[in-house]
Length: 263
Ligand code: ATP
Ligand code: MG
Image 1 (cartoon, protein in one colour):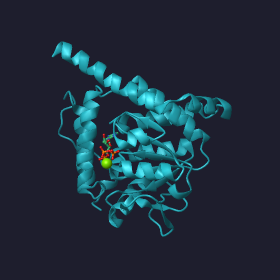
Image 2 (cartoon, helix red, strand yellow):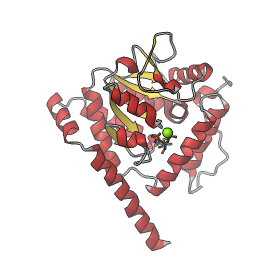
Image 3 (cartoon, helix red, strand yellow):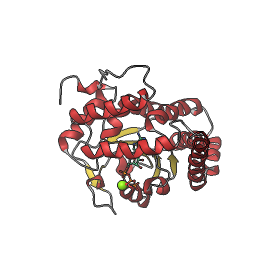
């Protein structure tokens, strides 16, 4: 791994006044992540798909996303063995936030890749550790096979995703979301596309950019950590993911209508 890559410091030449500064910085982080062996080249394309949906959403956290994030926090606090699944993009974009979320939600962290590669897994684990993770699952020998999936994502840690009750996934492929569901897991996902297979098959879909939503999720976990089990269950049981996805699509439509008026 390239020297100094673990912290992915952005030595940018992008002027602070640039109107698309945030988005350009995210791209820079991913390119840097690719160059230092964290991100797969396909991960850059996946970000592109996400960016397109973020543009349609107005690049802000919608009311529907905020609602799903609060419900996700309740679900995480209720979980007995929650695990956050991390891929290259997530590590490059928000390793520190992943570690913080794991702390406040008392969750495990596991590296799990679609385009598997031992070196890349180790690089991701290293970045997470440099950002404060004490244990990173998914890189050892105690791996088990998740049934109903053919990609390399089927190999999961016996002490991690394999025995988890709640799994947080991001920038995820639909196949594994469905396999996790079939294995009886409760799935929380960050996915900017409210129509993807992941978004429509997860239990709680946060239709927002992970770079915005992950710290919000950690904040909700902190805020709600004193809530009673009954009140947390009430929040989760009232939630309808399909309805919330529909609300996200409506938010896109509203945003497009506003743009059409000023175009
Ligand atoms: P699916 O397999 O679930 O049907 P897909 O094949 O359309 O989805 P993938 O490439 O498998 O898409 O997964 C990438 C997903 O991650 C996309 O839905 C994309 O919108 C989403 N995504 C990309 N970047 C981000 C981001 N920064 N934050 C949240 N979601 C993102
Ligand atoms: Mg896919």
